[in-house]
Every structure is written in structure tokens, then in C-alpha cells.
Length: 464
Ligand SMILES: *Cc1c(COP(=O)(O)O)cnc(C)c1O
Image 1 (cartoon, rainbow, N blue to C red):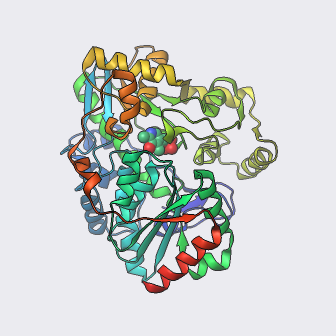
Image 2: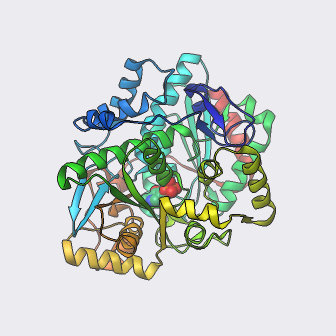
Image 3: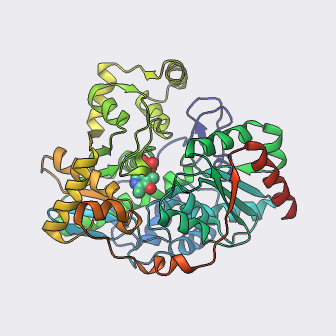
């Protein structure tokens, strides 16, 4: 199995190199050269496996240059940090299945991928005697999941910028109470956009980037998509056993199109998925695309589901590559037009293909709150605001012909204010958050200035 770039100028890359490369050198995104297709017999053989065994069977088909025992060990260690024995359990509530992806150390679905990526980075870097210094800006969820993914790992440091005083209290504490010596929290006096601009400027300084072995940990890394494919199979197994139905619909709260893209790959591998329901909040570019063929960027609106407050979905280019049937020249032209005019050209024929795989609804704040409140009244089960958008979209779009699995992407305790607003009470805190206010913290508050961050990196990386 080799990896190629969506833009057509990079090919023949082994899995390990694709993981360390992140973004392809031609500016495109990396994809496997072909997608392994599972037969009905293969699917039946996966049915009885527990989560780590299933993960191994799926991942081994893509990570062909990692010895089987090493891959098994990486997977076992990555999911040993989850608090539920089924890793991503499925619960049945009010006619819907809920795939709980929030039993990892930071209570959001990003742990499923980043626990694995952290171990994989450490393994590859140690083997090659290389160092990696991860630099990223976060508005909340990604930062803490990335920090927990690499804390205490050899050959890796992580530097995460967050806007001082502008992330939720729980999110801030989750990041700053990690005091391992390889973790550096920088609270900048500015906004998330200021943080992102600083990271972009530093990555643009190619010499500095190389000298200091800087790398990113964002959602375009293929290994993150790969780890997320697994739970579609896991949920399918569970729900099939319970209902006897072959075809299953998934509803996915979407921001950067990473999570739902993993479902699309699972479908191309042969998993009998009906529609993929794509839920957005007021930032609804992907809903407009699927429903009207209108892929044009607007301003980012802050909502109750902040991890979906995204306009340019970074994984979308991967889907576009398949939609254009692997024609990299056409893809490059489309991306150029998009970058120039903020619009992506699609014709009726393409749109028809899109609608065969996807349906979409945009759920505003009021409906998000109504959904949390209504679900709690009906079932006693508390949804987080991201998950609530997926539930509302599933209710709107499912025709009842097959069971629907809604991906629960965060634990409600991460967003207590929205839950309080909807239900009048705060959600219970899971054990990992107990007493978090009293733990030691490590964080530097600095001005939003790329030169200050650069000096900080120079000093720390020289020390390590
Ligand atoms: C990141 C995130 C999402 C969006 O996932 P994408 O892969 O970016 O589409 C949804 N919900 C939560 C809680 C998240 O943290």
C-alpha cells in the first residue's frame, strides 16, 4: 500500500512517511493509492472482534510497512486509556443508536485518533532517531486531545497556543494541568485567529521550521482518518447484531469533514452504510454544498458547538478527489478557483453523485437547545451540543428505512453552560474532571507576537 497526493505531484509514499509528512509536499492531502475492498466473508470475520482486534484488522490493511506485532502493541496502548471496556460503546435511546466516542482522556472523539497518533509518532521517531516539535493553535478541543496524545512521549515536544481567557474553563484546565516536561501551554493575549496567524507565519519560515523540526498535528494527517474508520465498523457490528439490519445510516456532527470522511472511506471499503447524514451548525457551508451545490465561504459565526465553527473544511479536498474520480488536474483547477473566488464550481451531475452518499441539515442554536432539552425529558440522557446537532439532523432526514447511528462526539460535561441553558442543570462530571481545579498547572501568558513565540521555541528546543 502506497500513498499519493490529491494534487497528483507526490506518489509512492509508504504509510510511515505519509504520517510524518502530514500535508503532502505539493500542497495536497495524502490518500492511499487504492482502498481495500472487504468481501461479505471479510465483514463476517470482523463481527466477533473486540475493539483493539478490529482496529488491528482495519489498520493493518493501510499501514503495511509496520510489523504486525508493533502495530498491535501501538493499538493496545492507545485504547488502554479509555474508561469504557467497549472503547466506543453504542447505546439505544428513543429509537436512535448513539455511538459514544467520548470515553477517552479528554472526553471528545478526537482522543480516538490522537491517542493512537501520539504513540505512532513516538514509535516512528524513535526508530528513525528523529525529533518532532509540534506547534499548533487551538480554540479548545484539539489542543487538549493533542496534548494528552503526546504527553510524556519520547522525541516529541508540543507547544499549544490558546487565546487567554477565551476558551471554556474545562478546556483551559484540561490543557494547563498537564505538567509533563514535553508539554508547553502558551496563552496568548489575543484571539484564536491571532494564534493561528502566528503558527502560519512560523511555518512559513521554512528554514526555521526545518532547523527546529516543527510539525503540525491537525486533522489532515491520514493516520487520524484511519483511526476513525474503525468505529464505523464497530458500530455497524453492534447495531447489526441488535437489529438484524444490513444497511445502517450514520449521522455525524461535522466541522473539518474528518470524522464523516472516515465514514465515507468505510463505505468505499464495502461497509453497508446507507446515507451519511452531515450535521452542521450555523456555519453551514457543507450543508449548502450538499443541498444546493453552493460551496462558498462566509464568516465564521460563534455557536454553542464551537468545535464545528469552521468555514473551510480541511479534509474536504480528499472527498473532492474521489468525486472527480481521481482527476488531479481537475482538482487543482477547482482548488485554484476556490482560493481565488471563494467558490467551488460543481455541476448537476456531480451533485447527484454527492447526494447518493450524503444528506445534510444545518441546526441553529435554538434547535440545538431544544434537542438537548427534549431528549433529556424523553430519555434522561444528556447530549452535548455537538451531538445534539447530529440527533436533530437525523430526525429531520432519516426516512426510517434503516437504523440510524448518531455519533456522540463530546461528553456533555465539557459544555456545561449549554447543557445548563437547555435543561436547567449542569451535567454530572466524570471522574477524570474531579478536582481538576486543584491540580498544579503550567502555562505561560504571552503577547500575541510571532517573534516572542519563536524565541520561546528557540530557548525550549535548545534545552531539550
Ligand atoms: C472536532 C469536533 C467535531 C468536528 O469533527 P470534524 O472531524 O472536524 O468534522 C465535532 N464535535 C466535536 C466535539 C469535536 O471536537
